[in-house]
Image (spheres, rainbow, N blue to C red):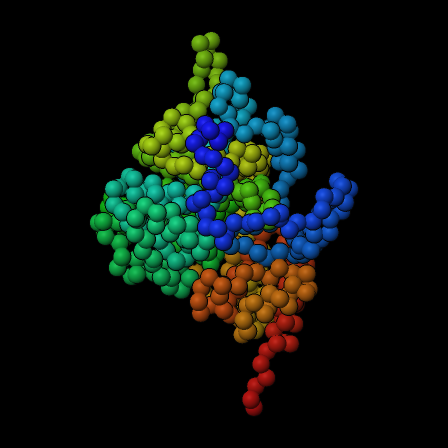
Length: 444
């Protein structure tokens, strides 16, 4: 092998790595153990984790604890689905391809858009792909993104765009939503795309129609990208109603377990006119020579397939198993079920917000309508509240100060249909106790 590649030794392969960064000798790792010992060790380590199995969760920010019907796991763990990865051979992958086709159809129905791909990696990378797509469509190397978009998603967009010399301009939030005047000050005819999230990271519903009006007036060629919570569309108008060009979403809430951060599911749907610029895969229905219905990969725009240097993306392979879970979830709930889940999330979130502001020293930070998340303004740091409520077996929420300087006393609280009235009331009682114990004593 060395002769074939033209080197004398293994060390020659490492010349690009500085000597001080190389490990000399053996790795400092424990001696081998038996399978029995390894399983016992793994269980011991796992017990150090706190999960939603033993702690009541009010965490959100893009990952939510929803109820997953038993039929979802029962079907996706069947060997014919669970072991399938990439359907390069359509003739032996009809079940997988049909599942993708049904997934696409349901996503279009949910978002109101004309076409959906067969999924992306996750919501954050999906938004990054949408930003790059906006630049490809318009030829303008600038993206405008609201600061109310999930901070992690914004970091991904910045990373994607930095490598390609694309300018990313931020629009400050005002009152928990995208600032209208700030948006107008940065959007112009050289803008490639405008990116917003609704419900946004603070849980509030953005004025999507007003944002579209600004784009029409000041940047008529810009691509309008909306990041959405799929379940919220059970009660809210779909982004298509606001004339969105591309809709992306995190599909974890559609029947996928939280799983300590993944794997998750990226949703992308768009107008038909942009289909040739879309990353990922598209599955279509057709008929064979005998007029029997079948399914095929219509577009495969990755560099691993046929596009090579003309590929629309280099990492957007579909999350087939996760998309299947979403398909089974949406099928089992149906339109009425999705609407019911969305209603329960909304009603329970508003119940908790109302009782917290009536009973505790906390206030709502913003007044705009919200879906299933809201921001509490606390008299003490949010991190302190989180730590104390964790001792009561409650994940209290997300400390906004970690991503938004100046918001150290603000807590993002999420409520899903899984939270019972007893759990909501327990949250109120716990926060009341924490704020009473930790509230500063008046100088008088």
